[in-house]
Length: 595
Image (tube, rainbow, N blue to C red; front, side, top):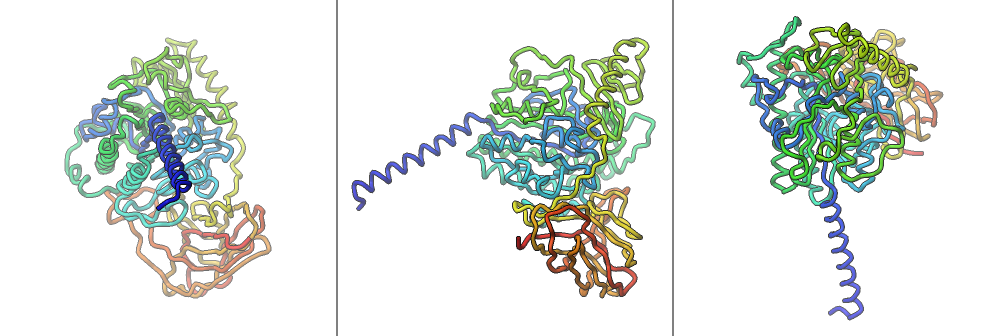
């Protein structure tokens, strides 16, 4: 039997615990959950609600029916810039994002992300899918505000079934088709945090190539004639289109699975769901007559759906015609969630919360939205787009950009050209200097650092397995003059376990490879043959164009190497070659084991 004093203590403890639980439930009730869904290379026209009768996307369409639809919403022409603009509320050149690979996709470390702001406000945060804004800590998603991360950090992946992925920086093997796998992990995260506010980011990697999709989704399209085709002069690859549409229907199914779980757990009315794309379609296919596709700064390359659903708070079926953009999502979602904190740097985005909640007057009608890629810039106002070609298009009357109206609106054409010139000087000017940021190694928060072939530089006769670096490996390593280098900056001086990820044919076993940084080096001999076949072709629906096939790599411990807290070239070379080739290389990993 408990003493009176102990009974009082236990009761007091129970009261504290109960009050803490009530407080947490109160926070969950006051703060809405946020689920952001981003798809990869899906065009504006790849939805049945936009008139595409080639496919059916009822679950995605339902988000517009049950929430708000932005009729003129703009993203970037390619992947990593759009992701950066969503994360920061700022145009991507401001964050140092200049390309989609070899380090140019990384978001500057002095940029604060939407995930960090939600995390600081007490939200559980998770991201599941394609990151594409940096691989090594502190560019990694776990360092940018996400408690949980599962997926791949590269721009694209070479195989979508049972793929090699990572979970919070540690290599893991995925299960099944990547889009299904990412959805499974997102659902598990939502369930684990259903009693507290969560911010969940679900950036899918499809319908980006390679064009792989489970048979149950592809069989519908395998031999069906397309009802709607690309309307321009460019030739449509019908097989590619079929695969893309099948991947879109798979996305619809997966998004439906998430929405069903929100309903099952009675979270729908407490959860803001956002859906958009990262750029235009990755092939010439029906896109509602819009000009351009992925990588274009015209409407077809940068116009995306945006649906925002919040039952009971946002009016069902409401539509907004005034242009908005990915840079608007950060301030909008913070406002909707009642989070007052903002990044220290000024935002380019404008909150759309008042419009969504049906309050106030739209103050964004006269704003300009700029689109940029590869030196090309276009600008959109409420009525016109000034294309990179210098022509003015009246999108109200001519959404397909078929007729130059500069002579009819000469003053507006001049005003928009001046605005583009100023934007080039100021915003785009922030990318004027070459990107010389090193790849980061040795942070205590992430003892293991991956340095993939994507981030390396081949010298001598070494080549990539394909021209697109993102998922490539190095091959044709034949000479003692050949070498692979990584420009790295070591954060923590100490001893590191170095590991080579390689394949090697039986007849080539025996070469000695050496890893060098400054005056320190370590070496090992390749003693085990490993020559697996290339994977991917057997499940590709169409042949690849410039993307590498993949294979299973094994590890060779290179020993430990002393790394000073310094910047320099990490060099991989061969000191002895016994066959025709040294090895094929997927990358190097470094693990801090002793400071």
